[in-house]
Length: 258
Image (tube, one colour):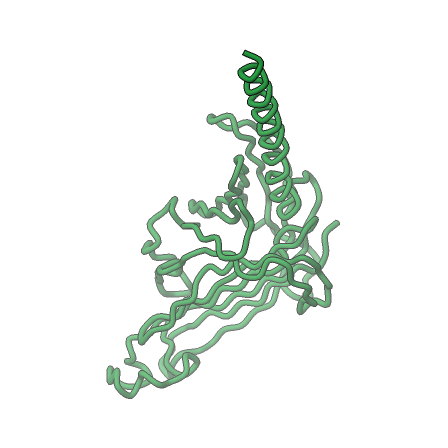
């Protein structure tokens, strides 16, 4: 009897400690998302945005370049139908040298126990997941058909075709192109497709207390007509700058948060 009581007491203690560990671990993991994507109302993030759009012309493919400044701010929060809090944000932009920002779009952020999702332009992206650890992968575009074509300049392109999200480096120290120095940066590798007709290269970087600090997309396509008259053999070894017929390049870099 004495041995039985001792065993039962030991079992209760073990279960109690296990329960305590579980209660501590869950908020600790959730705090990671809070750090890398802070959901703070009325705290603006300012970005430098450099973009290139390919435009077909009579003389060939023209690369149209532009630089602008973007401001993103979460302006309100409310409960969704599933009980999760939804944050509504606004993006404003101004061209280089312009004095005033102009409204661009509304977006929403939804954070669950283990994911963070951003929705914009009728597309929803799972930006971050737990655990936040190098090598962890997920389908960040599962909420929509990745073959859906998006208007890019005058052409349509399946920008998100072939994407596969995974964590790369999770503790980088970087100096961004804007001169901002950031620590403990996490890189989300989103796409790395490079074949005869399609190039998809994309990643995002996040830093504690700042959220998104850098975003890059290079999505281009060719049928080898403009460069090589449809001769895929001649087209195969050409650089993308010489053979791309439609697409876009985008780099968004944090300037500051206020």
